[in-house]
Image (cartoon, rainbow, N blue to C red; front, side):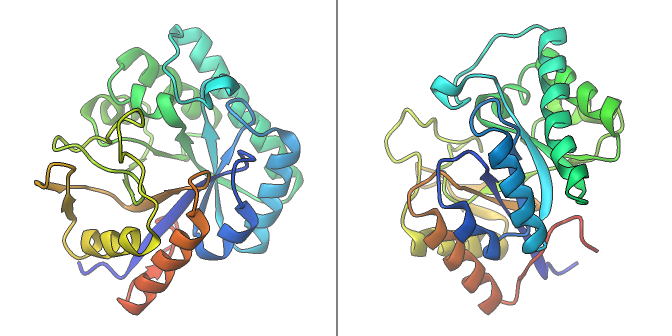
Length: 251
């Protein structure tokens, strides 16, 4: 099948970027559930903007660690993390339902996102919480056997993403933010990289080797400086190359 559309998602409602300017370019919004950043007013504003721009809504759940923006590992047992995940999704569901909108998926944030790709207990806690709330919700996660197996055990559909503004290691994981040049900022280079990936599912890792990235969505971090310029460049280049920006949830 020839790819003619691709999802473009961004992490929003974290009160760390120009969210309003991003929405016109997006097809999916990962709305922060108020624990690693943001809060209820930010969620309400984000849901309203998503409705206005016809952007699919997802819950962005993370560790309750505002000091580190949810980007540092936290050791939580199964029960604690399951409740934390469950409560966050319900916090956003409350806002979504009152707005007449609909939540379609869940994406873990930061350190939690990467941890569930390698930690069976934390993976189980997150997927079990989602499945208890609504097993029809998709889950946007790393492409690892641990999280795919955990999601499959409770019937969740998994979706993977290509990180437009992050450098990759040769093994296909992201370069840690603690290392130089882990985050990309040049809008033109970011969008060129996206088109390169769309045309062959491969990109250059930080050592120059070619790696395959299996994904159905493109992620752009809303808190990265220059995110709006990058989103606009990705959107425009995709259109010129014949790719519609459209959620994987839209047939």
